[in-house]
Length: 228
Ligand SMILES: Nc1ncnc2c1ncn2[C@@H]1O[C@H](COP(=O)(O)OP(=O)(O)O)[C@@H](O)[C@H]1O
Ligand SMILES: [Mg+2]
Image (spheres, rainbow, N blue to C red):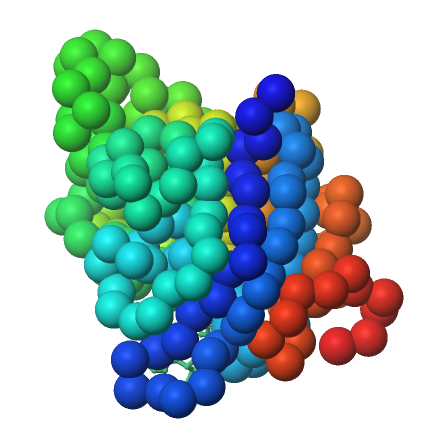
């Protein structure tokens, strides 16, 4: 069976830099697996997420080496809309992904672009709000919410397209303890539904939901042995 994600000899260098941020990264992720990646701030975790989600090379410049394959196809050969039906990403800073006037519109944006019917979209909105436990925020302006609430709204908008692969870049960083509990439960549920997850974690306490933990350090991805 084709792996949901295969990373082969991946390297990336920012346009204004001489040295690569990372190089020769290799990883195969199984369907239904939760892989967490840890590493010091600045080690390149978010940039790696951009490579996994096709943002690099499609929207950011730099020298990309090797490749990322999503379900057997190289991200370089796919378009962003094609990728987004298979893979959803929750950014480290939710402000970068919230742009609609209400939470409801935020959730509807992806499904509307996919051409889903009005009634199917309405149901999707109800479902994801309930799942994430933020039905009461439905008509709020995302920009006026707290950091933790924004992360939850961003989560609902990612879930609205029901992607097979999900990337969470420090998605729990601004959540309170209830939010963290919900997020861990959500990760387990998604795993049981057969979804494939990559989570970037800062707090080691969040690693309990992972099947495998990798460390990004000095431009290489290694098995994590408990030390950064
Ligand atoms: N657009 C950019 N141009 C040049 N350097 C960048 C850019 N974005 C991030 N960096 C640098 O790349 C390194 C890795 O950043 P990042 O991927 O955000 O790391 P992490 O998520 O692990 O904290 C940092 O040193 C950062 O300053
Ligand atoms: Mg980061």
